[in-house]
Amino acid sequence: MGSGSGTGAAPGTGVATAEEAAAGLGGQIVRFTRLVAARRHQTKLEQGAGERVLLARLVRDGEQRATDLAAETFLDLSTVSRQVRSMVDRGLIGRRPDPEDRRGSLLYATESGRAVFETYRQQRDAQLAQLLAPWPPEDRYQLIRLMTRLNDDLVEHQRNRHGDGTPPEAAAQQGASTHE
Image 1 (cartoon, one colour):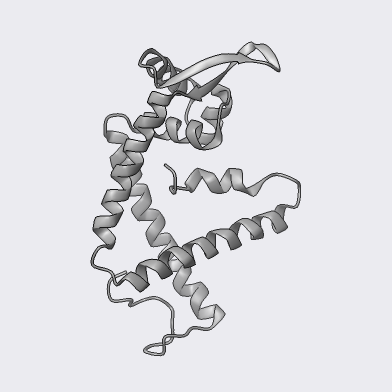
Image 2: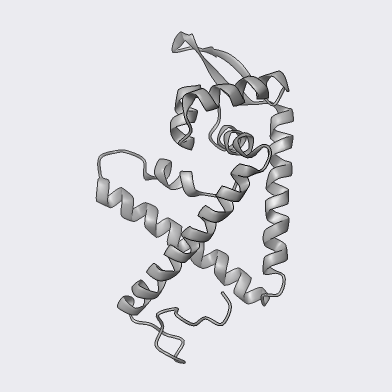
């Protein structure tokens, strides 16, 4: 957040019109997206990055087929299949027959997998806590409150915009990092 320059708010007033807020927020969202993309690129180079993504989906969304898991994580099915084999061998995820199609199987996070996921989540939270430590407590609270409000409004906007019954949460969850 730094000095707050370039926020789009009227200089020194602490208020902004909807248009000023949109311009400032738009710029900050682009900046934030770039920072997240850089972090994801760095994470992909780290050992176990794919594992974290797959475990997060299985823990948060429950059991699912490998094809659905690949689609939700935007990973190639062959990549997911390799990761799944490794994680099954290590006891992090399990398979069970799909009751709707016995030819397929459903993947689920085991207790060991949930524990590994929890370790990843705690590491992420520790990094964020370190980043936010110098912030005043009220600013930390407001950040969470306002990010939640923004995300909720974005989901509602997607729902109203698409109105086709497709849950907007599916698209919104791809970028979610609350539980990943």
